[in-house]
Image (cartoon, rainbow, N blue to C red; front, side, top):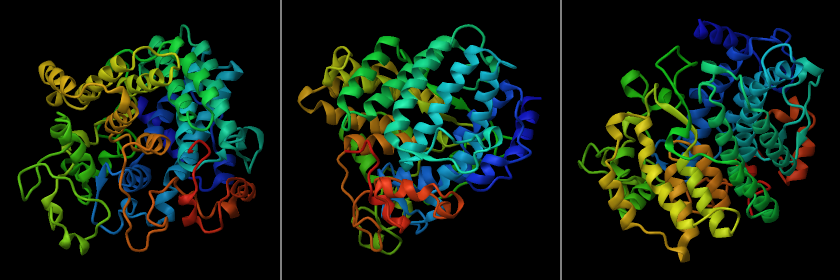
Length: 496
């Protein structure tokens, strides 16, 4: 029954195109049962094949050298521009997430259905949605977004990222405070309505947002990081925030990454391979995740990473391999249509605590948190398949061989965060831009649009200027030009 109702929600949200129509669909339901709507919004935040393929894999994973590809349409590690690919996340984000999220919050605030705990959880999830959108695109419609059918706002204003961040932090604090009894129960695909886990998730997300401000506004970052830590963050891998997907119905319950890479279920874009950068870091530390994230290459029988920035012609001059099958595919066990989709993990949280401790921002010993982050980062893959479990002795040996060194602590933490967010590519890309770790060597592929530098954001929809007249003011405020490909060279507000 739940899947039928989710499918009905899909029908009522699938016919919009552009911000005006997204905000004014006359067929939009105003008060759908909040349980069903929360399920729908969570699934759409996980996303479908379209944006996971384009913004997630082709761009984010490639730009930060988690993956590599020779195919010309895998543009990310070559820093070339494809407007539809680059804007895919923001396009589907407003069409399939923001509007229904705002409608759900409006219903819960009205008091006609639901309870205060539901409202608190919904406010936290709204931050999940906008946190990702603003990190990838900078200034976006926020305060007025999704209110076309509710308030007649056809053309929402674009809000400055700084203002969005301050409100998201406030929303987390107030949303956490609202959580008590009640909730969504089994309609909540993340924690099945567990109030304590939602509070820990909310505080962990607050810590992540606070640390995102570390370079642009250290005082505000410290204040919110300390508040998040005091509130209580994730304390084990059991708190990892993810959706466990299933094999169907198509486009609703399936993992969007799996719908790109799962050959066993009839999908399987065979272009991507593990990046040489990723494999090199795993090998250099004796990391047991090497055999979790990848499989031996078809031609050599060993795990080998492909260099970034090459194509099917330039690979011929590469000493480490001259064809795609000389390099390792992603382990098929972690990219199934029924694989979980991670939003935030205990491993990330511990690494953020380690960084906060390094900065003196309310956390305890950095080394202890770093060690906990290492352990959790290896153990988290058990969520994907029991066969990926690593025994305690192996994990102990790995941790012992890679002790925390405060003199290089920020680099160690940044490198491990990058590894812990493999397949959570939006977050991996954002944290890389903030910290500069790992220390990646950019490529300089012919025809790139960033002068051989790793892109600093994704470019939005080239047609948005004609759809929403408020876009021009947002472009001017951010220093964005008329050529959308040039936007990829302009940092977002927090990227200093």
